[in-house]
Length: 211
Image 1: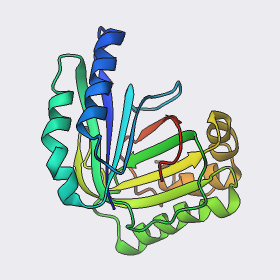
Image 2: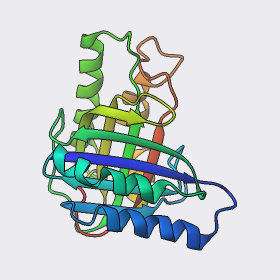
Image 3: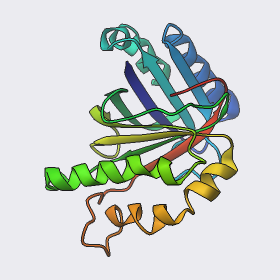
Image 4: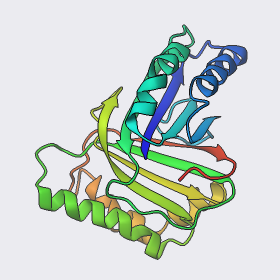
């Protein structure tokens, strides 16, 4: 499976119709993908854009077959900036039972290129242990990025499905294993920090399945 996620930031003056035309264009461009999610982000995202687009293809060639159409849909005066990643969904990840709709969350991050392989492996293991302790995470996947665009040279994508927004902002973000264990990889006051750049924490509502 080949996956593409784009976080679209609109200019502040872009009206609702311009935003919706962009969203419709993205849906049409990627209509042949196995899964297509194009939805406005919810309040509380951090560097997460105004529109979240997530596409899943059987293989990379399918993505390249529609890549120009997707780029054309984003080539509008309403779009200020895009943060995006391309990656293989099966890389360094696992998937749970999922949900029939809810809130999809994605985190784009960049690991320090000087971090040791052992440190990166421990970081990835810590993320993948979270669902054992946080049952609010219904489905999840951790992947390494093949190609990145935007603010940073993203290296990882950490995705989850939740039943609703409260499950993300409460039991997940406020869980002790999150702020007392995993956050040390992001905290500049901790010696183990390996994520130094800003992250893109984005989420939106979805129907059916994403992961």
